Image (cartoon, rainbow, N blue to C red; front, side):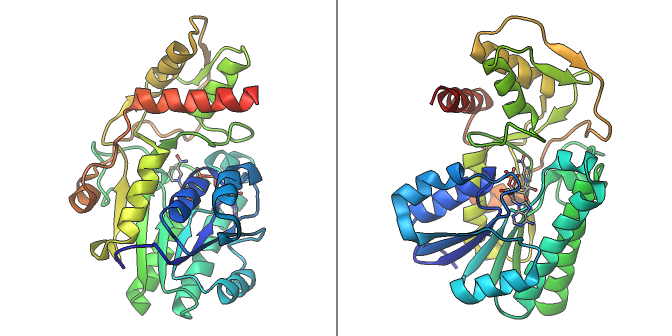
Length: 323
Ligand SMILES: NC(=O)c1ccc[n+]([C@@H]2O[C@H](COP(=O)([O-])OP(=O)(O)OC[C@H]3O[C@@H](n4cnc5c(N)ncnc54)[C@H](O)[C@@H]3O)[C@@H](O)[C@H]2O)c1
C-alpha cells in the first residue's frame, strides 16, 4: 500500500491527543472514511471538531471499547476498514490509580485486534506501542532491540500487547507495523487528570501557579512534536518495507525535564519559583531514541524544533483558555 487516499480507516483512541491529529491528517489526506472507536476515557469531542467541520460524514465515531471483540467485530463489519491504527490506551499515570486495569486495557485491545486480523476482519494494523516499554535506558541511544524493562503496569501492558501482536504475526503471517513513539507533546494533549509534564506545566503557568518538577529534574526524555509523530506513522503505514517491523519514532535528542519546564517558563514570561516535589516512583531516568531504522525508510522524523513546538503548544493552550 503506497497511499491512504481513498482508503477506509479505523482509528482506536481517535478522540485522544495523538489519535485526533492522526484523524485530521488521514481525512485531510483524502481518506474515504475514518471510523473512530473511543471510550472517551480521556478522549474529547472537541478534539474531533476540526475533522467534523472539514469532512462531515466521512468521520464516524463509535463510543465503544476497543478491547471488546464483539463490538470491534460489529464496527469492522459496518466500516470494512482497509487499515486500522491502534492508539487506544489509558494514560501511564492511570497505573498508579488502577495498576491492573492499566495493564489489562492494553492487552485486551491488542488481543481484540489480533483476533480481527486472524479472522480477516482487518487486513492491516498499525499498532502504536510506546518507548515506555523499554523502561530506563540501559544504553544510550535506545534501539528497537533494547530490552523490555517496563517500569509501570501501563508499560508492562503495552509490552505484553506488542509481544502478543508479534506472536500473531509469526503464527498467522499478518500485516502489522508497530510504531514505538517516544514522548509526544503538542496541542490537544490532556491537561486534566493523569496529565504529562508539558500540558501540566503550561496549565499551571496559565493559571498563575508555580510549575512543579518531580525529582531533581535531570531525568531525561526524547520529545517529539505530535505532527512529526503522525507524519512518521502515516509514512510507515504506507511503506511495505515496514511490514512486520517495530520502529522507534523520536527525535534522537535527550532533554532534561528541568530544561523543558524552564523553556516553558521563558515562553510564558514567568520568572518565579519552580517547586521541587519528591521523585515519582517508577519514573524512567533516561530516554533517547535511536531512530536509525525508521529514518532509513522515511528520512528525518523530528522536523519541529523543541522550542518551536513548545511555543505552538503554549499558544494553543492559551487560546483554549481564552475562548
Ligand atoms: N503521548 C505520548 O507521549 C505517547 C508516547 C508514546 C506512545 N504513546 C501511545 O500513543 C497512543 C495515543 O496516546 P495519547 O497520548 O494520544 O493518549 P490519549 O489518552 O490522549 O488517547 C488515548 C485514547 O484512547 C481512549 N481509550 C482509552 N481506553 C479505551 C478503550 N478501551 N477503547 C477505546 N478507546 C479507549 C481514550 O479515551 C483516549 O481518547 C497510545 O497508544 C499511547 O500508548 C503516547
